[in-house]
Length: 253
Image 1 (tube, one colour):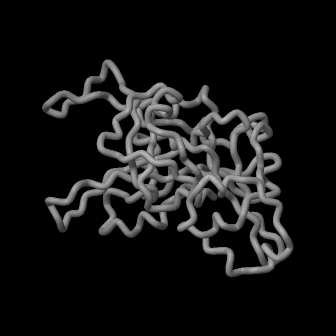
Image 2 (tube, helix red, strand yellow):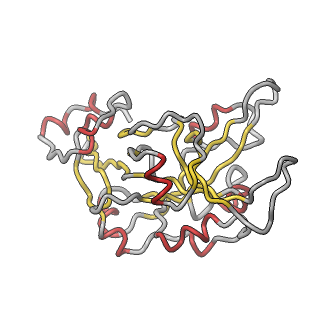
């Protein structure tokens, strides 16, 4: 699964890296070393631009950065609390799930990340690891998004939310956890974001072993277990002491 990740790059940097325009508007960028569900984060989408009357231009598309809330809220949901249970979607079944199948066909996004955290069970305790690139480039998680409106409050702003697709862990990652985010290689970004492509089944497979083998799998401090902790020290390599693993109070995921 993917329940926590790091996203520290500013919109200008991400716009250059993902060849996108910055459409984050009034978003106040800040480095987030402990992204947790229900937070607002930057995603990448590609859509047909619309004119003043809302009509899309089918002849072109624009790739842009958008801010969304982590935890997909289906358009038919009665309230937005369901989003906290929709932070991940299995790549192998998203096409058949009512909450995700429409988004998989029409509303796909990329979720930029410096890296993500996963916990390996060691006896009764869990050791956190941070998975990241060795060259500092961003990872791109395959994501789905949706727009939800509160029908009980016509004045309320619509909520745009996303979920991260997961797949079977590959290579050394399987020694930490059996699931991982669906990380898309750069050569798959354009097809994944293409708003006119409604069948992306060939992309819903685990990433190539070469991509995974190039990642650093770094043990980190149990401080990341607490969502209130948020700083660059969370990314530092930390070889656990026996006492770290024996204290269950350190885990608050």
